[in-house]
Image 1 (cartoon, helix red, strand yellow):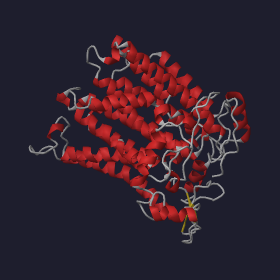
Image 2 (tube, rainbow, N blue to C red):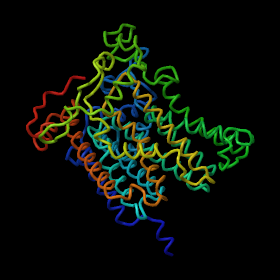
Image 3 (cartoon, one colour):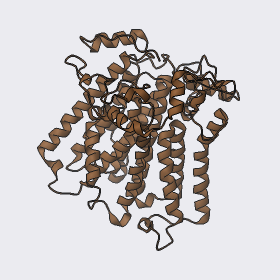
Image 4 (cartoon, one colour):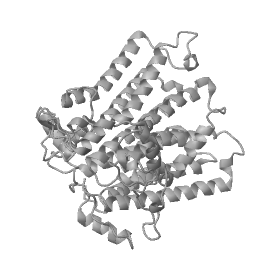
Length: 496
């Protein structure tokens, strides 16, 4: 009877989730809890869904915002289609004329909370003598990570990004469960991994590439381990499926991966084109004539090796302008050390580096990398080998971002799948060690100090991001500025 009761989380945990949900809604609504309040560029998913059920893939330019692509005389958006499907499901309760963008953002934010909780719990980091660190990590990920400062405004960009990281958290939990419990490596769970990968890709392609890259590697391992001289023989703990079972897995994975390709084809006539910048209305008039900005980007390319150093600076290097002696004490900054930064990265936002907004995650991930070659895990179940797959494939979107032409504050959220898994693995690697440095008081105090810093920084960034965001209504910007900042003069937000 006791074991049966323990299958379910305690009531207090549901209460904590409810409080976090209310807190997230408070941040999403900028202290206005009305979930039906319209948001600028928030109703695009509803419009896309309405056009879809009418049999069209294009959008009305008056309802598609400024991120439009003019293809063969019609306007299209590039945003992932999965959030649109979710908005379609919500039409069972509310028509597309009702503004539900805040709910569209709240749902994946709560999914993120559930995913990180399940993953940390799966690593058994919430019990035992070091549970303090596990709970600290959970708190940091929930209210002290970059997720917080893109909870407003609830527009289509943030909805898609949070859906992708929320689904990635579930995907990572499923894979951690898959690694730590060999009995879960079943046909149905391989199928579920494929479906999750498809949902991530339909939300945000950068993270979806990593999810499907992992599946591709697993697929090779499933088919190829019978060869004794195979370099993959260390993965023999994976199950052996029949040809029919392998066919089922392959079909589901192919259909799941093809969904995004199908959407791309219906929009732009090419399955492998997600963002045809040559048809971007801010670069071109759609007739092959480009403005100065469009010519510069299209001639130099959107992926450049010489972007790497300034992008690393953008995402990791703190500047003096990030600090002010008055509330909110931390600011986003456009100051750069590299003089050539603006030449090819003028499409950049003011930023707060991850060294300030996610110091706990960075520290634990570095510890994980440092300990990687040391013995840990269960060698009989190939834990280390399997974790190496999922851990390092999440580097792919990071490599993409640090060589990409655009630098946006919201892109820091794409680092979270890698940093979250790295932080969990750091605590898991040393869980069985005695007299570890993590048991010392200085280390615990350091973690607490860094955790409090990240919580404070991301909330300061939330305020500045909202106050200076052109898509936030002026009255909301004025309210936040008057209540939470002092001695800082904010000019009008820059035109997009």
